[in-house]
Image 1 (tube, rainbow, N blue to C red):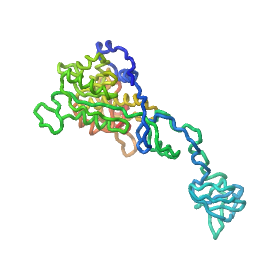
Image 2: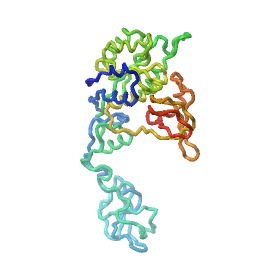
Image 3: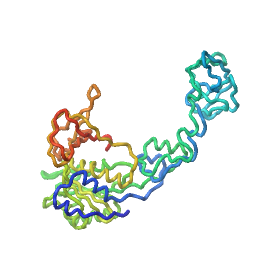
Image 4: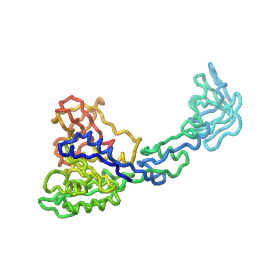
Length: 420
């Protein structure tokens, strides 16, 4: 995996804040793509990225077959007016076809999925006929060719049905299985190392002091990254000094595609992640015009992409979903994935907002009794209030140039259901 050359960001760093859209664009333009692949059983392929084009080697279905339970006949025997009577001469089942030809004024009892016998081109649902002894009576409401699945109707032989870059869904797995394919080539898993920094941060199970905080960021990130196409490398809590941090990051870079740390990327004297990363000579930018999540480091150490996220728990999650997640999908070269939509929804409260930065508000998206969608904030929006994320089911994205939102105005909403 080769890291492409990156433009200098000295001017951006010196001048201050980088608009969020520009930051994301710069991140995406500087990322490598994962070209390596692995071959896995299709039952393990859900939520993996396809690394081959899947070609149909035969028609699906292979032959014309019945779409319903009913009676198979030739359309020439359908009445133009009134009722026609046909003799039932046999039965066709899925897996046990009727082998003889069906002639004029004849029909066969046929079940869903059964191959269409010779002489049959139409199937009438069993609910739409009257059966007396061995004769069926059919009225004049039917059309030639109805209720038949044609050979190749689903997949045609030689057709490219799935392309490289497809993020595989359960339906895709079934489609691949319908061609008798047991194993598939997918992009290898991304290896992502995560770490927390800060001398005040302690592990779960440690005895807290008045100044200590339990490490929540690493657990939030671990949960966000817990997906089939990622292998997580848990670095734990790192000692907060430049030498230790740089050594740890360098060690992680020997195996990780991405390194994510939280904390230590602000401008304080004790924010050592920034110092350690600058020693590598590969810092790209630090300050983004976004709230929460203003301090964010992006660059690379050796062959690893590096994200230094803020220390506040909400800022970590906002930064992850707005910057890191798009980067992950870009590195995997995912071209087709279920849409993670943004919606225009009415705000049912005033939301204070300063122009000149993007603000990500934790929101509650809800539907009233008339089917009208509205949104409101979760309340206090401090970047240390992690409960605001737990209460939320969506981000309210207030654009860079927008000011305060008034009740009844439309806002952009990003539901968590498309992200998490």
